[in-house]
Length: 256
Image (cartoon, rainbow, N blue to C red; front, side):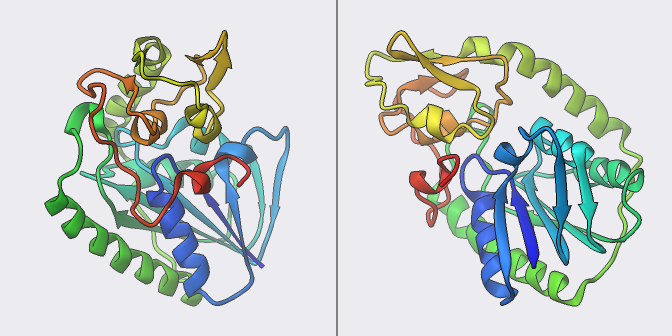
């Protein structure tokens, strides 16, 4: 049995995880890292473990970092794939540095280009971007399945001073970013944002969504709000969000 662990806010990683599971044509389980990391103990027994996650500011999302540090991997093979819009820089190097301290089996580190969805910096992706990046993601995901079937190995550089610096700034930023999300009067408290937040950082309180310090700034809420009623920085009320076109909101709901 192979086990795939994914972390996904807008469906890119979930789509690739599902595609890999389909293509390897072997018994396979999918697990949401956002849920798994909340367990006190994480022991993973599998023929192979596959990790699919995004790059956040050239580093690992905090939940993914904590998951890998906490997990006990009882397997002989771990294949890791990072999705990215612009560049993952040293994200895979950070992961390898963690795994080197706790895992002695075979490893592979791969990259999957996807649609950039950090709207606060890059804005909403254009149709031209979608037509370019979605086929790139599919091609790289198919190659990832081949890598897993053949249990290929490789290494990546763990020396990543610039990436570490940018990632640290982002991590520090998340400690205050959650205070700057705004709701418009259009919010009807549908609770979609609460249900899809991969780290359970949004709670409904006094009949409105409340953003808490658990927020990792993944922007799942901003991208997936049905009424476009959440604002952060240059993401204005009503601005179109992004979700992988083959992933529905219900697929991102925790526990779905």
